[in-house]
Image (cartoon, rainbow, N blue to C red; front, side):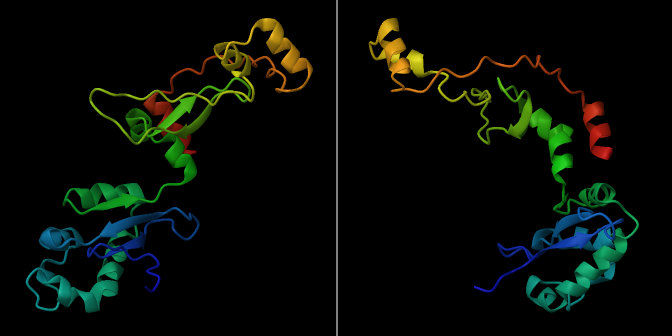
Length: 205
């Protein structure tokens, strides 16, 4: 199968489109999808109502020969709009699209924080850090994301559960049968919850 590059699959043509500032910002783009059932509203969003019933554009098969022309017209529309302004405009017409986000924008996006897609967890040595939350979310189940344990943190606990006494465990450590206990946790303090306005300000920097 040939490589598709920016092209979307699944029978719905999609493309990465430039927005205002793309010359200097590698993330000034949106992903745009043309859907058959929403073609009329897409034409309205583009200011091209004549395309709705034009035989050259009316059906998905007919549009195949003109896709790059269509995407070119969309880029003209978006030339003076940021990716967020572009998405806000197109979503009024229910056009499937989304901004291309940088790592910083992902980290500080308030919606991703609120949904638990990006979470902040505490680690006993490195301190608080950001990671990906659980993709599984149900009404009766909310997973808690915690920092990973330290190397050897639970060795003594596991050995005790297996029936080893304190003196036996100490001898195992002395003989280097098991590794030494981990260092004492570093006090980092509990990070305060980040407010949505703080998140937006950080992402805009």
